[in-house]
Image 1 (cartoon, rainbow, N blue to C red):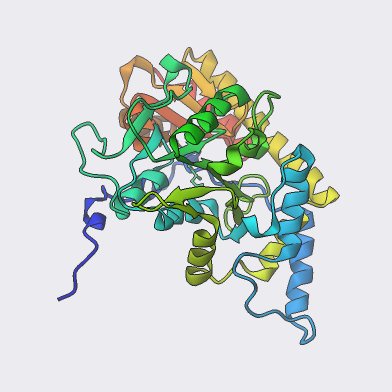
Image 2: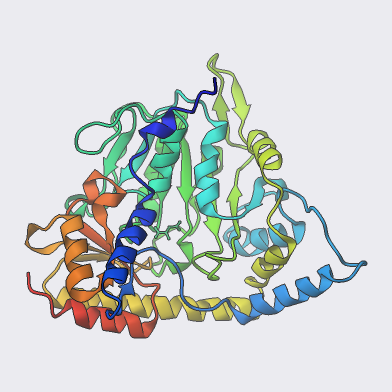
Length: 410
Ligand code: MLT
């Protein structure tokens, strides 16, 4: 008799964005005459930077020649890309990252979802609330969640609320935790914390032997000088933090797939007997056993994101999305709705008016304005009464969505 992994039976419904897609598709088929504007999932809409396209075309041609053809690559990624990452993202900030501390992958969703494999099932996990659902769902799968409680929390997960009341700045947990997921700039709230606030987390992690899983997928959107672009800007962070970065939201690789994780050699976790164990070799073992490398063609495309032309084109794309963010922020604010985020991140987080629940607001927007967003409660209990709009739409759709929202009565 084959037994299932019963942790999977605990998972609630479908993944948040699949559920939204299902509801939107049902609405669209019932109302084929309506033009639905999708500002729900944080998926980019601009085409890839020309520098990346050119590099990938060239790489395709290399694959067509016997002398330049490549089969399996290194599971950890090609040195040409890792060297560019270190030289551009870390070395200029005085952060010393070794070539064998960077692991190229097919996305930060995979990395943040898979990282739990190398940590024990008895760890107490803390998440900020609301949170990117992948962190919680993968810990349910890994047996670290406990049971679902009324109100939507899991009994063994520690939730750190981030709401307008605390200005979206999470407090250090008072209970014992072993692993903390932090995402800054934050998905879903679009807010972030200062370098000084981040330092408190690094100091806490060092004092308490806690590992921080730091998702920096939206780093390219930081516009304020007191916000760290990498957790390793904070002294001592290499002893406690794994950083996740992605080419999805800067170079538009959501469908092309390339990201990386930095797992410093200084980072250790422990056996039950208290023996110190380096985490880097464990991740290397996991990565090389279960993953066969991001395609050569894609890694060449990612490498081109660091060329002068690539950087300039990416800067243009980010400016475009951030102008969308401004249009949404200002439009929503003019409606008298409290709005957050959208300054260092491509997400706008708004307080639903008239005390509407997140899903009630979703339904109203979809049925009356034919605009799709993401219900805040889908990201965790503290997201109830909030709603997320993404700035990744086209300019035309963004402006149209905002003018439709302004016609709604609450
Ligand atoms: C989101 O909408 O939260 C993100 O697009 C999801 C992701 O990056 O996987």
